[in-house]
Length: 325
Image 1 (spheres, helix red, strand yellow):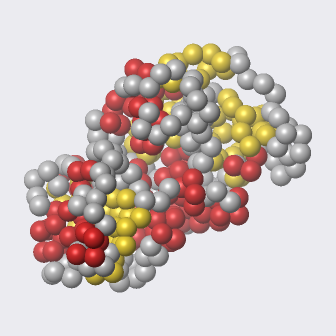
Image 2: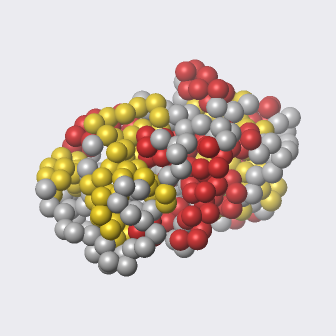
C-alpha cells in the first residue's frame, strides 16, 4: 500500500482525499518510481472541480508533474534502471508517494538540477517553452504582455523572455508580487486591481502595443487583452484561473487588428516523445546555465494537499509549489 490523494467526486479542495492505495508491479513499458517531490499546478484544480473531465473516470489521482527515483522497471524498458533520478510533466496521477508510469513520459535528471526544482519546473517550464518558442516565437526586440506574471508559469515566462531579448510587461495583483516579477525579468509591472492594464500598456509602449499576450487568467482579462496587441499579433490563452473565456464573435479578432488567437495545451505540444524530450532539454539547458531560475516558494506535505489547493485558488502562492510525500 502507498499513500496517495484521490478525488472520488468533484468539488472544492475538500474533495481531495488522502488515503492508502494498492499498487501493482510495473507493466509492459512502465517504470515504478518513488516520488521525492510533486508539482502543484492550477490545472490540478480544473480536474478536481470537473472543469476538465477525469481521465479514466473517478476516482482519480490528480497531478501531472513530479520528480523521483526509479524503484523498478517493467518488461521492455531499456533506457532506465533502478536508482535513476527522473522527472516528468505530462503524466496524470502524480499525487502519490509511489506510482507506475510509462517510461516514455520520463526524462533523466542532470546532477545540477535538484528534485524540488525539477518537480516545480517540468510542467510549468515546458509550458513556458512551447509558449515562447513554438506557439509564438519570441525574438529580441519583441514586447510581450504576461498576465499573472508572479505565478508559476509567469515567473518562468518573464525570465526566459527577458533572456531572449524581449521587453516584458506583466500584470500582478499586489506590490509584493510586482517586486517578485521585477526580480525575475519583468521590466514593467501593472497592478491590475488598481490600474487599467490596457491604458498602462499603451502608455508603456507609447501606443505601439505588444506582439503577443500570454494569458493564464482567462475570463477577467478578456477581451481587454486584445486591445494590448499590435495588428497581426497573437493572443495566447493557456489557462483560466479566473474562469473560462466565454464564446465570442470571431469578428472581434478582425476588428482589433486581424489578430490571431489560440488556446494551446502541453498535452498536444508534448504528445510525441521527441517533442517532449526536446522541450524538457530546452528547459534544463536554460535552468542549468542560470538564465532561468525556478523559485519554489511554497512546500506542503502531500497529506496537506487540501490546504495547498485552497492557497493556490486564493492567489496566496507565488512561483512554484511542490508537495512532499
